[in-house]
View 1 (tube, rainbow, N blue to C red):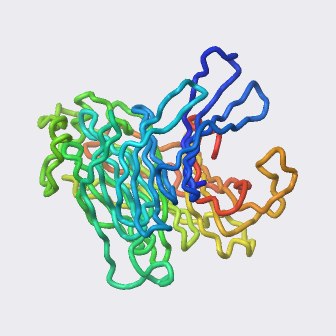
View 2: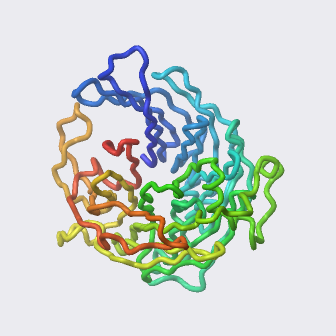
View 3: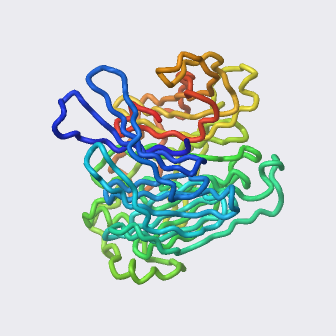
Length: 436
């Protein structure tokens, strides 16, 4: 299983104690499964298959869900064919208990697409950015109403020489593309080049443009990261953005000093520029933005704070701490550990980080996730870490910079069974009480 998306449902006509969730799951079998997860009262969960679609490709490695517009985007890594592909689907809502997919666009793209993110421009425009393990970053303009895709930009990365881990670092290997909390920058961990590649996102033209990369420790192999959400304040909001003009005003430089491609006509016709004039006091913001990074080759979890350079010139990262992705355990089983994914669960009391670890089956006698099977299994781990309080915001400073965090290092909590071996990816439910 490579990606699961949770979609909460309200089941009309059923008892109030019944809850249900749709899950969208892709795998290297080439199947996209739509599953229904139900629970009645305090009883056990039941997972049932709704439908299956093989329209993505042989190696359906990643899904991107646009719940608002009922669109699903699937990446085929192309292991079998040597070429990647990108497919868009409309989700047919045939009642709460049924759903199916209708293919809209299927296009060949550079090899080894492994991760994507859906970006929101002005006035409802959308862009899909895709990270390719085979050293590329590509973007596609999306029609949110139809799910149709138009290729837009492509960037091919190079490096002068292999990295310290030559067997894994002979070439650039972008492994994720992630949007920052302000919706201004893309951060792309490059496992092969030991870099965090930075791109600025112009929400008017939908063009992205490269900014200076941020180096990480040589041989560490950065894989996936997550931003700690900004605590809600009067001037800050995470995507999707409000249409209020004062929030758009925060992006006042969106059209300045950009040497980017012109937007396709379909995007240009609906995009609009942010206001040129900013009401007095609107930029008096100060926020703590933390970025948490798992590095596969070094098997570490690192925490950074961010500062935003003026005139959309890029990002500065300040390293706060680095620790083993498996916590303080010295068990030799972790000598070959390769962390893969990180997710964040945010509450009023604390921020929790969850990291999936692979190639280190710490649990030798884990409970089988199939309730009908009593055979115990080997299992890799999910490691949880926490901060005692979330990032904070205030309105007392005249620039968009990072505060000193309340805690510089996440506290290791525990290791739990992942339910099997090599957990490449997992997702959290909207309320962050379920992991799949």
